[in-house]
Length: 331
Length: 111
Image (cartoon, rainbow over all chains, first blue to last red; front, side, top):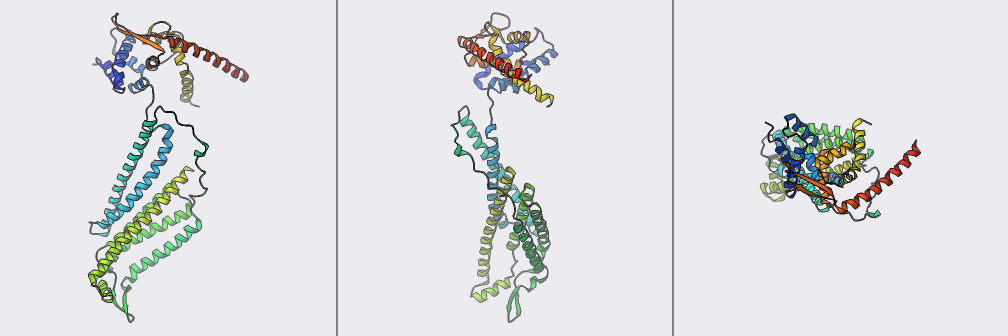
């Protein structure tokens, strides 16, 4: 049973070695192992001798003589730092284009289905973005390690030292977050009140008389519960910002989740087919000497431009937030 | 400080003496296991998994020369000091003596 165990041990060592060492090490290690045993070794003896020699991986490392790395320990901190920043950039670019793409092509019929679909798309694209960020950064550092292996580094200069970070860059201004909390809550409240109670009053008036209602209240009613949820979460996040007073990973994550949720919800809202009643388009067309469908066309391209604009703005905000958070952790 | 940290310190301390220990025993031919035993007899413990690769490395650096002896029933690879190995050994021995005397001075101040 233990017959070829020694050969297997030697193979487990030599397969981890460069081709040109293998034959030589195999011969010599075999001879050494036989020297450490009696002529007809028992299973226990073989077991003891091989364990004395240690794990094949360890022994192979000793034969190779130098440690090899994908990312050298010298660069490990820089690697983590670069990985973080590149991930943030990749993720935000994905967020912009992924959100626009997902919003433009929603297949689901219900509001909830639409939100879930857009979220699922964003999550899966973000994951791929992170995987590519990881792959590229790792490959580049691997390249650096490979190219500089066994090379002496040039003398470093005092001027290469980094500047000291500006203090308090991660602090969230208290005034800013309190103002944000008040304004945000007020705006959400007014928006919700209109959505729930007065949506039928928004329209085109002539001589004080409502002629055409603009929004289709059947559609806006479907969104009410989601806007309420989003407003409540937004309120909580604002409170957390005031409470913590600086960016931390947890806070930044909650903030990011809410920003994405509320943006996606709002974009789905303005992209919903039939949100604006056709009569309203027709009425506006009448004033402007355009057909109803021409007005609708202009409105839709306006919505597309707005979507791109909002996605970019939100992404910039999130990038800045995460850079502050990462910097804060480092300090 | 726990035991593992302590024994790592001892290992670290001994690691620097491994090359010198090996070179000191190779004025005459030795094969891997015989060298291991020769060292052990004098109380110097070095793991087989460390010693065999070390011998190969010293040979690659030109300090040892080796030849296979296939005349016996068990073929063995014998190592001994090259001329360069001998001169490196003598220089290292001088360094070692300096280290010992410096360390002794330091530790005498302690006690």
